[in-house]
Length: 134
Image 1 (cartoon, rainbow, N blue to C red):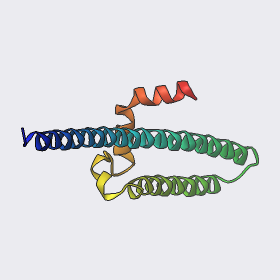
Image 2 (image 1 turned 30 degrees about the vertical axis):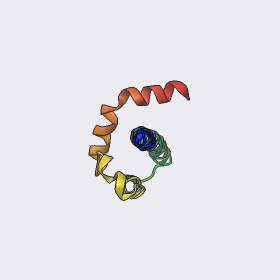
Image 3 (image 1 turned 30 degrees about the horizontal axis):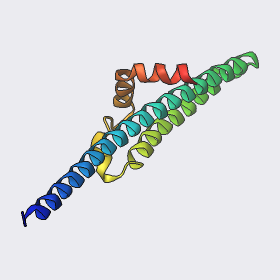
């Protein structure tokens, strides 16, 4: 009987520790899911921005042709814009990767633009849900 208080204390400590552990695990899963959805949404927004950028480029080329710009000027414009797009893609991916703390570096499934597009393709349903809710 005299050890009963010790048993109650041990049961309390076990329950408290178990509760904290499960809360930590649930919080970790939630954090990882939130980061992955943020990555997906950010990549989708970047793809949309680049699509609009491409449309603007085509519109500008059309205007250049209407105003009788030389083919050399048009090709130089295309080359400059394409180089800018390549730099934007690399910088965007770099910024996403650098935004993650050391703890979450392992959940990043891409390292460059092509692997990011594969990641976005694998998560097509999440993108579709994002579009439907907007």
